[in-house]
Length: 294
Image (cartoon, rainbow, N blue to C red; front, side, top):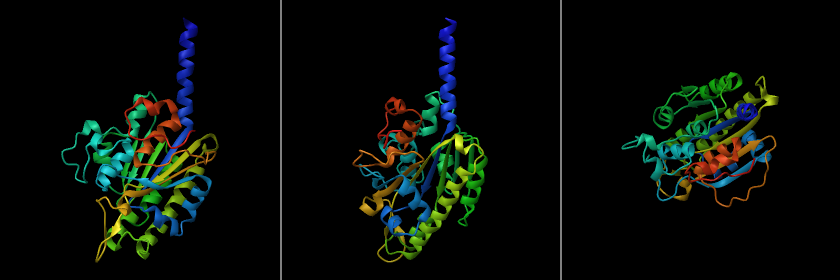
């Protein structure tokens, strides 16, 4: 009997140690179109693409899910569409909060002691989507690079296992000047975000135990956007420019091979779960699938 107990304890300890060495940096670039990302000068993101995998035709909406931040970020962070998580707009009207089950809750239900940090420029991600006490949260509103500065400091020193950083600069430029492949200010905003991405990746490498850690970096978005007839830009509908988003996966020893034909925003949570334990993906009633095998 003692041997059985010892075996169980050793297995639990092994799982805890394995989980603690695996880290995820999830970067959300609000309102980012992959076709514009391709033509922008983004050396830091390009480096991740060249050494990782770039899914440039990911759908952020099916079954007429509105291409807005509320349903978009909720789908990205839960792995299910709005018919399950019930978020249809940015005001979170008539939402059943019990249906919003984010990735950190799924990992906790799987007995993995995962700490999560959220640093965001859009506060409803903290107050409405996660809506619970996390290891660390911070709402950073200025569009002056503060999100990169504060996130870098946090990444270097935190005990968190998963860090979600939400960056809103591209979406602001899209609304003001148009989400357009010919939009100079929208392109400039994406290029500015690229410098932030470089700082965040560098922060992972400056960690004291970086050589003993296994990092997965994911970059994606909540929706695309289109240019209005006269001034500015918009999203929320079902046009291709509004629905298509990027997913980028990077890890030091990542396999560049993927058998997935069509990718969706709801594939991100299953991919994170699979990174920790491939058996977890089928444990929950998710709408997405893991994009690669780890």
